[in-house]
Image (cartoon, rainbow, N blue to C red; front, side):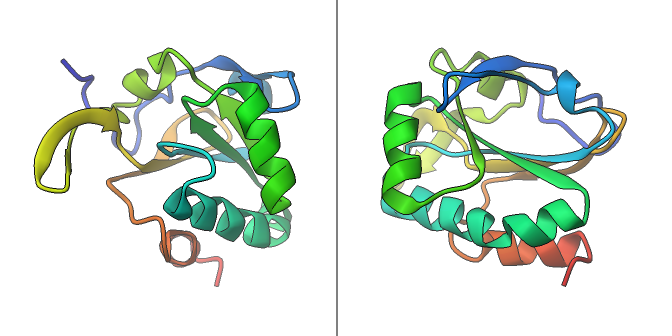
Length: 157
């Protein structure tokens, strides 16, 4: 049973989770900023690494345009810290080990993997506006090329 997918105009579900640095990160503490929240299946896998590196490469220009970036996976903070270290990541990496936040964003559930239906993380990206509302909701995004597409969608290029 997966949650209803979010749409633009919906209130973004709030969360407080632990980052790779061991800090508590709350969506509500970022009110007043635009926040890109993206969910990915696993740190240190090829697609997730490509996506995290693309967000890292774009971070300065995203921040200049008023955006924060939070990458959320079910990995433990220790693995996320290794991921950051290994790939020189500068985005905030957050752990959702019980997948409760992913479920609240409908970013965990049934998906097709190699033609089979499985339960898993649905690679998804959300842009949350300054008031905590969903501005963009994208499900089943591709790891490669996604950040460039998102930048075009947000008129940042």
